[in-house]
Length: 246
Ligand SMILES: NC(=O)c1ccc[n+]([C@@H]2O[C@H](COP(=O)([O-])OP(=O)(O)OC[C@H]3O[C@@H](n4cnc5c(N)ncnc54)[C@H](OP(=O)(O)O)[C@@H]3O)[C@@H](O)[C@H]2O)c1
Image 1 (cartoon, rainbow, N blue to C red):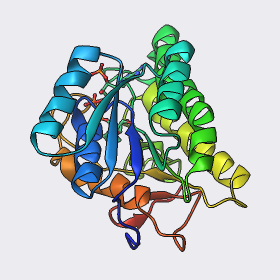
Image 2: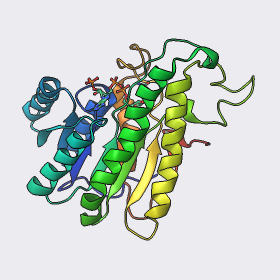
Image 3: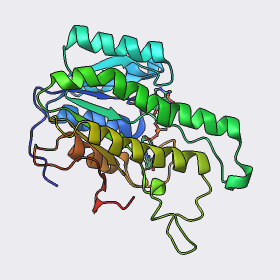
């Protein structure tokens, strides 16, 4: 997959950018010349993260956004409309993983609803709110953060790599994200906007309890999709080894 277009001059919003992979995506896009809007629900954490990137010389701006709060999402979209007039890149990165090694039969439904509120409904709410701004950009890009754990192919059957990951709410919320990626990509097929899902691989963040590779490596997968040229794909799930099976 080629990173055909430069980020210079582009306006990019990354949700959940105060830490982890989202922070590294914002940093990476900023290093490539984008104006990066660091979305965060926790204002002090978002402002601190933004200050770190500004100290590195990047054009970074904090944007308050709780993806589960429709009013907050609407206000964030209206701030972008007022200050920037368009959005070139939306990275739907914010997510939660709340389970602790419980089999599906023992999954707590309240916790599952909470997971879906952020990972699924929040992602759709942000996408819907930002779409008018993405349509105003010459070549909008939407990247939905997914995971290999969402793959039904990689989870089905005794010998599949992720058969026994015991994260019903998280894994299926991301399977929904994959489906949502396809549906939005289809709606936007006759526009320049591309919609893809990214599998960053296991990265050492709070979400993974610190296990995995440096988050900057997972961020690179999302950045490649955020900077796809017009010949790039839409409606797929990609990791650093290429396309991941549904
Ligand atoms: N780490 C991995 O191994 C891995 C693997 C595959 C996929 N992913 C995906 O990569 C993305 C980033 O994960 P990560 O590992 O960087 O996790 P992380 O370090 O826990 O960061 C998650 C971010 O999402 C934010 N967030 C959660 N709920 C939110 C809400 N309602 N509104 C706004 N922001 C919210 C968090 O904000 P607070 O700081 O306020 O909580 C935080 O900034 C996620 O979509 C995750 O599913 C991660």
